[in-house]
Structure formats: structure tokens, C-alpha cells
Length: 125
Image (tube, rainbow, N blue to C red; front, side):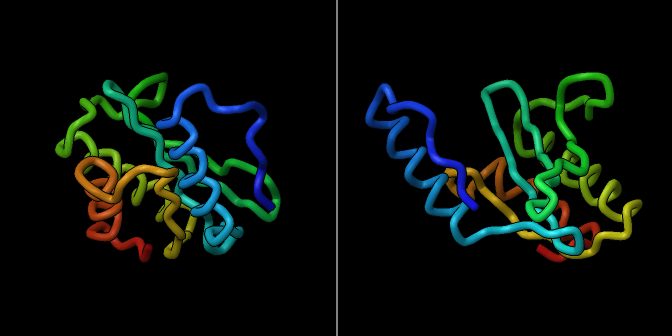
């Protein structure tokens, strides 16, 4: 089930990102055995949510801000730390497989580093 945008995008770039995001989400679904890893990146922070779409529930999240934050910057080295923490949390919940939702962003740089680090630490994506 895909959630439709609530309002019209203000810029062409925002509309293009919204279209990419929805086209990815129509093919990627998470379950309890194989949750969806949704990444969000800004200029300062990285956040990854682990989502069970069948129950419409976020299992947990790993980010570079907040109480239980990974103390890292939004660069490739920080992304590797976030990916390692993500793999550790998934392992503690006995989850070995996941699907990746790049959330409309290119699979490059920080986004790719998070996934590669999680793969290196034993998670099949």
C-alpha cells in the first residue's frame, strides 16, 4: 500500500523526488521476517528506520541525532558507523534479511556506505 502525497510539490525538483520515491515504494515492501530499511539523509544527519509494513510499525531506528545517537557526521565514515550499529541492532532482534528503500536518493556515497557497512556486518540486503 502506497501513501499518496498530501499536497502538490512546490518545485520541480521536489516533484521529481516525490515521483521517484513513490515508484520505489510500489515495489519494496517490508515484513516481520524481512523489514524495510528506509534511509533519510540531510546535510548534517543520517537516519535509518527499520519498518514492518504488514503491521504498519517502525521496529526501531538508528540515527546520528537524539538520545541513542551514533556520534558521527553525515559523511561516508559516519555512514559506516550507522550501518554497523544498524547491523548490530538487527542481529540482536534475530533479523538476518532486509529490503532497502533508498527513499528517492541515488545509491551513491553516504547511502551506499550505510548499506555496504550493514552487509559487511552480516545482514543480507
